[in-house]
Image 1 (cartoon, rainbow, N blue to C red):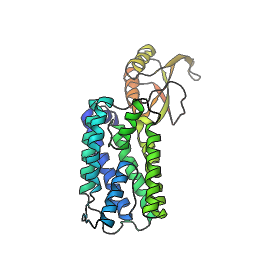
Image 2: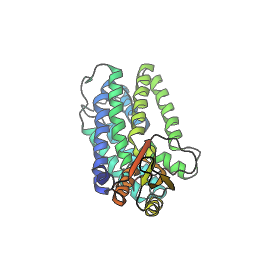
Image 3: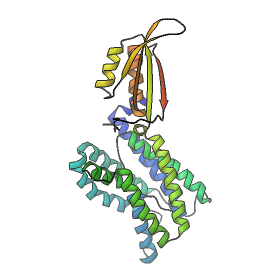
Length: 295
C-alpha cells in the first residue's frame, strides 16, 4: 500500500492534498482561535490580517483572509521560481498552494478555542500540522511560501540555505509579534512552530536517513546494479558465512532515505523472497550523500 502510493504520481498528489487539508485544519481549528501565529509567509499574512482588524476596523467574519493573502503572495514567488526550480516542482507547488489557501480560507474559525489550554493547543496543532506538511514533502510537493524562496536562493549560490532563510525570517516575525502584541503570544507561537517542525522532520521520509543491510543467497550483482542505477545510491557488498547453517551468504549495505526503503524492500524480495533485511533509521551520515525529493 505504501509502496504503491508513494510511487504513483496521482496517488502522491491525492496524499499531498490530504496533507494540506490536515495542516490547514490544524492551524484554523487550534492555532488561530488562540490568537497565535504560524511561522513563514503565512505568519506574516496572519499578522497583517490582525493589524487590519485591529487598526483598520475590518471584519472578515468566521473565515480567515490570511489564506487568500498567502495565495496572492505566492504567485510572484512561483513565477520567480519557474526557471530556477523547474516546471514539475512549480506546478505541484501551485496545486498544493491553491488547495492549502482554499482549505484555510473555507474552514470556519471557532468563536472560542476548542481546547482552552493554550499549550495543549500548540502541541496538538503542531503535531497535526507537522504530519500534514511532512506528507506534502514526502509526496514530492510543497505548500509554497518561504521554502520556495529559500530553495531559489540556495540554488543560485546564496549563503542562505532553506533552513537559514526560514530561521532568519521567523526571528524577525516573532520579534515583531512580541512588540506589536505581547511576549506571551510570541512565545506560544514559537512553541507551536517548534513542535510542528520537529514532527515534520520525522514525517518527511526523504529527510530521514536509514542504513540497510541485506543478507541474500540471490543475485547480489543484480541487486547492487538496481541500487546504483535506479536509486542512485552507492552500495558495498561482501561474502559472509551464516553462523547457524555454515552456508555462504551475500551481504550488502547501503545508506538511503526512508522514502526509498520501500522500493528497495520490494526489489529485494522480488529477487530473493527469503532475503533477510535489517533497516536502522535515523543514522548520521557524513560525506557525499544526496538529499532527494520525489519526482
